[in-house]
Length: 253
Image (cartoon, rainbow, N blue to C red; front, side):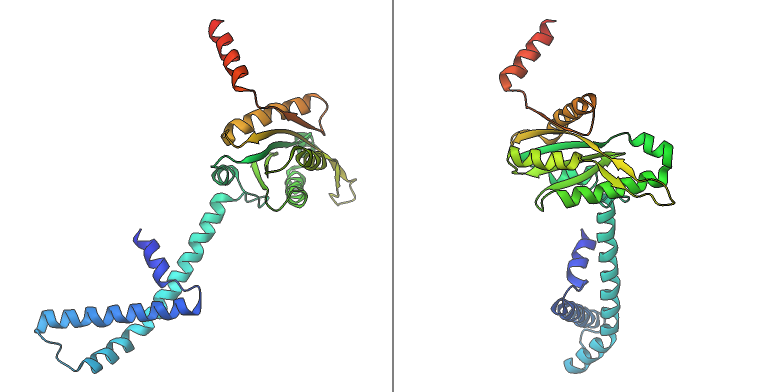
């Protein structure tokens, strides 16, 4: 708490913040110094002007040093926050950041995507090429979704996309485009790799938590894999009546 307060006060982001920090620091030194003198001597012992000039001359270099240190501390803090929310290989949001950004349910389409035969790519070409494919797929995902949409790497070769307020026809168009085969050049005289993706999607009414939407989308993804891969399968959220009927049937069994 105290560190955050000091960062807000002393870490300069604009020139006026720098000036405010210097003034605040110097005033603190002037009045603290005066208070100490009065406590020890019972008086200031010198004209106020001399006291202010002396205190300012001594405190200004330290104030500048404190601002430099605080600015660096703020940079480190922001870097750590970025690392905590970013997948280091692809630069996409990680699972944690995806769930944090989607904490409030909203209307749209949740989509789970998986690179087809990724293990075969690693086994045939090596993990370096596998990492390159993950990076290229991440770039493709960012290029083919809209600016208001959210994309993340959940782990391994699995990705998640949330299409904010996307109508079904638009979401289907985007999802099918994401699943299209793309040829990646691996270099070293080797033939290019054709990479496809399978996807499962579900439309959200803005009332379901993200975990439930991804579970339903993951089931649709399994159906896409089972149907031959390189395709999009849409699932539907089961109605409340159907969910109750299924729960009743399971309890009776």
